[in-house]
Length: 368
Image (cartoon, rainbow, N blue to C red):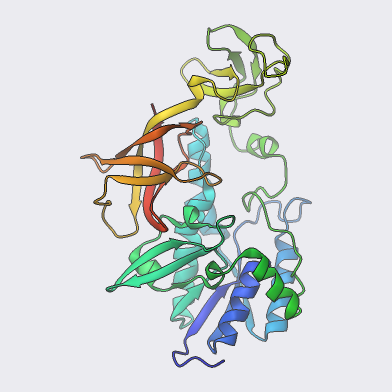
């Protein structure tokens, strides 16, 4: 079906099914579609864990089936400067960053957007599950219609300028429908597994990867009473709420519901003493936070929300939690939750919502 508003749209083709169907939908609407494959990581690209070569071959196959041009663009230098360096800084400071949020803000909707505009694009498009709505000349970021796949959390740092030039076609669909379309039109990657993790780590063991870039100093693991219960390999390698890989299973103390030893969770990092503090039981009070403060804020509308009552996510795979938003004079903000939130983690993003509208958010600085 031809569209009256034919535009030149540059699509980020990742090799996955979501971006492939995005390109096909836009071509069907009559747009002049060009695909770009972004290479964001070069180190050990030939290792068993890095799939970028196969992803490019998949993207090229998709472009061939759809009948569009595909350009290969290398953003590895920008990625290393703007995303990876910040990632290492945050981990080195004992926090747990979310590089996907930074990658969207700095690479996909900055470096890629700029490149697309140089190619004469009027719009860019990606396979994210989110939506854009224009209201009285202002642009809103909305959740994707598939609640299980909504990715607005990762896009909350986008600006009015970026949103005004962005299309998210699959945000209107459920994942099952996207795969059905891909099968129907014979896309070679219709059944390709969704990628997990972050691009420069892939499926490799995370601790082994960080070990190559961060200095680490082993130290004590203590329980809430200051008793030594084990040794850690370096505080950077742990995140709040972590249960696996602590090496202290089976130590007596709290009992679980069937009488077994309750599992241990990381509750705090004491950077001054180089001590990792763990507690037993998922519902331990030290893992519950009624409030948080956040900095490095970014608002979709360009200004903080006027509402006090809203909802927030403090991690991606989380239901919206009702809270009260309190703007602070230094540009930071506080959230006070109706119900305490589990394992609120400095370095992660606190993202605010008003119903289906993503308002923006900030980086968690501390939790109370």
